[in-house]
Length: 353
Image (cartoon, rainbow, N blue to C red; front, side):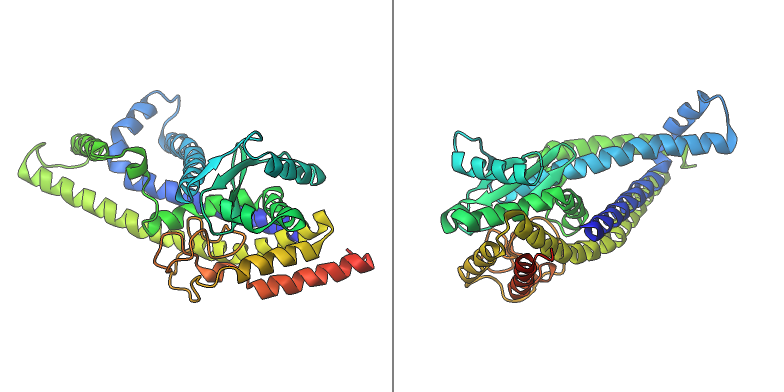
């Protein structure tokens, strides 16, 4: 567990570093349009020169970074829940499920997470995390396929993702890849219909006006308009390239961490319940029950719900072109997970764990 904790910490630090790079790049690209604001702020500072420039960047980057991380976690959690048609359920609606989670959370000395049920026949589960807590999502298919100790074992697995903090880290890690490959479109989700186009036109209008501070041509002239369009196109192009570059290490981190986190959650769940055989049984039951899942990796991106689930086929076993098909390399093979759990079982029997 200490090794995993260190790995989670380093992964989180690298993700924050990427976020800092994204925010800083956006600030640099938007500098031509932020000149009036910067000048207004500098005029009210008791110092000037380099100190004023440093204060300006701190004033811009710090709140922007906090807002960016918060928005990623909040948006990604909501979007992931929407993708699998999951909703938060209370103890009145699913009393047995809540009792199981409460009991296992108490064993793990963990604050019970929210519970959501996905309207899907495919048996699977995953955990997502935000700064305000975690949510364990299970499908109707999982509740139908498993019961007793095997269901407890799967729930314990998801609770260990929450306890290890990798639910939050992986939620954060899934945002940029999903944004880059087009699975996420925050503006379209937050501003449906034509409102986002109206907002875009307003923003474009403000950018046009603020460009007067950086373009030498007379405001409103043809040369001014052409200069603005060129500046805007270069900003968009460089922003797109930078986003792709910054996403690449996040994809690599996500794939690598996904394998490690599954092994760690399996081991911790087996130790929590004291019954590795129950988790082995759950893995074998669920894995053998889905015969038409994609057998090859046809996607290069690690994003969205893929990689978060208990088993790698997500919540849909259709062709891998579907939005919920899983990039299978992000998960260790079920046979390897079973072998490791059998090793845990032997350790428990000998008392060496």
